[in-house]
Each structure stands twice: as C-alpha cells, then as structure tokens.
Image 1 (tube, rainbow, N blue to C red):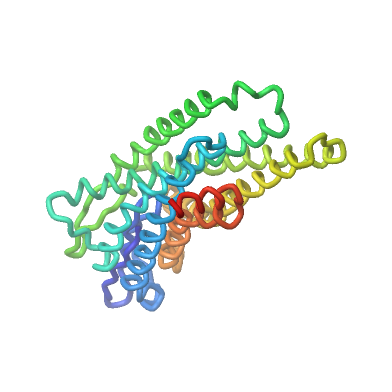
Image 2: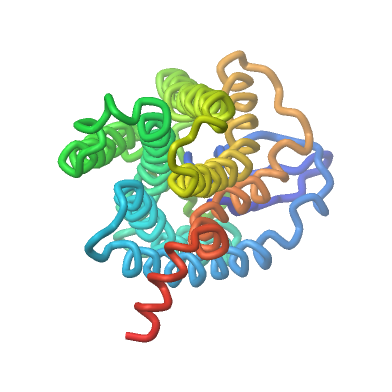
Length: 329
C-alpha cells in the first residue's frame, strides 16, 4: 500500500513510491513531476484505508455469519470463502494506514521486516483467491444451467469443498514469491516496505502472475457466461419450470455483479502493473505522472474487499431473508 516521499533537489524531485505487490508497484526513480501530484497522500490514504478496514471487517464478518449457516446453497460456499479472504486482507490495512500517515515510514520496530513480508503475502493471497473463487462461481453457474443433468457429482458438497481447498492451496503457494521478494529497506532516512524491483526473475514472474491470475480467469469467466446467456435465450420458451429459471437468472445476476466489481476495481492496477513492469524489464524511462496516480489505483483495488457484502444485500433476496433472521436472533 502506497506512500510517497519526495525530496526537492536542484532540478528534480526524487520520488519514492512504497507499495505492496498486490496494491502498488514500488519504484525508486527520478522524475520531474510537480509536487502537487502527490501532495495529500499522507492524509487521504490513512482515511481511505480506515474506511475500507471498518466496512470490510463489519461487512465480511456479517456475510460469514449469515451465509455460513446450515442449509446454504452450493454457491454460498464460495461466497463464504470470498468473504473470509477479504476479511483476512482488511486486517492488514491498519499497518498500511499507519505507514501512509508517516510518509511511507515502516516504523514497526524489530518486527518491521516480518510484518512487511507477511502483510504483502496476505494481499497477494487475497487477490489470487478472489479471482480463483470468482472463476469457480462462474464455472458452477455454467454447470448448473448448461450441464444441469451431467454435473451432479461436480456440484456435490464434497467436490465444492475440495475445490475450495485447492484454491486456497494454490493461492498460498503462488503468494510465496511476494513473501520472499519483499523486505524493509532504508531510503532517505526512512524504512520502506518495498519489493525487489531489480530482480528480472521477479519482474518476469510478476507478468506471468497477471496472465495466470487475471487475464486467463477473466477469459474463462467470459466464456462461461457467454455460453450461459446463449443457453438461456435458446431455452427460455421451452422452460418447464419458470420459477426455477427465474432463480437461476437471479443467481447469475448476483455472481456477474460480484465479478464486474472485481474487474472494475482491479483492472487499472493490472494494466499499469503490466506497463510499469514491462518498462523496468526493458530499461525504459518512467513517464511523469505514472507513479503519483498509483495510490488512487491501490485505493480502488482495495475497495473491492468491502463491496461484495453490499452486493449480496441489495441483489440477493435469499441473503436478505437470512440476514433478517440473524439480526432478530
């Protein structure tokens, strides 16, 4: 999560951007950007992270309590795991809010390096598990609508639980490089939690992760829902159970909203991640203005962790009914 530290030289500004790999890209570049581009980050970042932290903890905990009861739908298993991933992530935000309020200074004593690595690792695991669970939800909707009679085993409770375990295992494994290549370094008298942007191996791995954990899952999701829409349009008139068809459409609408929210919030980060990483690999100079916008991209991406509970409440009648029962209890 970002913070900006700027020192005025004779003709230029030395711009340090401190980021988590799943929040922002750390850069140590000399840029002639006006100081106004990054002014105020030490104020709006802690406030924004605090808002995300409070709403994310309350919202995702409530989702886990409401949806985690007995009698849940199969898709609710993925919903609970999504909420759990987001809940664990937002618990790291007080660290980043504190650092941002101090101009990026990672002042957490002897445990600073460990906290830097662990919090960066949690953010990586959160992003990977989110997109993988969303992909599973898309495939689940495809099996439920298009392959209804042929997918009873694949949509069994045992298979869904095994899938969730596989997603967590893959996410924890893929996040290891972000645990290894993060550390606390001192720059201009400040301790910064940064990634090793000088490692070509890590930079190449970063591009590969964007492909495997963003582009490829989005392609799979688009294919699933395109097939679902075509199937529903061609079988709408012949539907034997209109009520069942309406329930499927409602479930699809909710899942599509969750996926759309993820893509909208994480797309700017991933686009600029590819641009900046490719620039570093090629040795090209950074364009002025690319770095100062990074805090805004991080905030947008982080907001994804508190959006889903609102989507469930406004779009899922089943969730609202169960929430009322829990609230009264």
